[in-house]
Image (cartoon, rainbow, N blue to C red; front, side):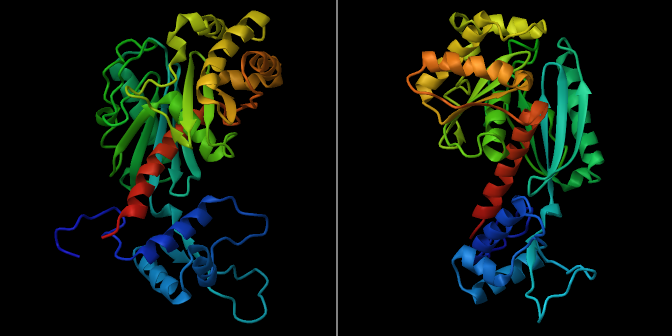
Length: 367
């Protein structure tokens, strides 16, 4: 490697594809839930089989990964039953090698999460805010929530490798600038990358809240088994996030799915009912909500519709009449399910956004 080659948080770029293949296998193993009784980790033979390369090549790769402190040998529990014969060494991805932060900058709340590199949530912090909070104070609250989430996780900000942020309105995913924000006065034009900079040693990523909600559902939520998804974030506002082939559909201006601005869809009626804490399972409001969802369904023809936000807590009281109305409005029956994330959906999507950035660098940093 030349002296001018770029450095990464994990060291110099990889020289061998085998190392990346082994790293992918170990990272995937660390990101899955452990089965009951599982000790976790993989043997060299198991890594080689999953990576599709020879065991000697994997052994060299694991040595390199161990040297870079990305992989560690699992030390057996001395109190566990000892197997017959000499047990094979097991290795794990060191998820504690770094951390990411994710924040949902909402109208009435700011919720920050901290996760390790496997996506396991380590800590959180929530701050209640008012809708009329000014721009500077909202940014300060977001920074405070992120710092306290890191503190609750017992980590230093220097160990934070990336920060993800979600907020209402279209957001330019490249610059991190809020393009439009009818719900928050003075929020239009805020550059979240700049506003949240300095909270770690890596980049800040930003996106629309509904888009990040859809990303979270596809990652570990109700839509984990779907590729084309319409996600409805329904709380104090109603917004749509769209996934095509598992990827967020941004649109030219980052405004894909902003059906709520079309007054003919009558989502403003549902929004007003939600803001006033009125029931929305009346035939009129169900029809208004279903009409906008049907518009998205007829355009995307998704595998599934997921309802998130505060409305998701209504369960079948809302879902059953909504399913019936969508069946009448759409060409084909469409599965409609509620999110299980509660109000953490957008912050979870922000975590996934930050992890995507790191994983892109980790798995493509080859010379």
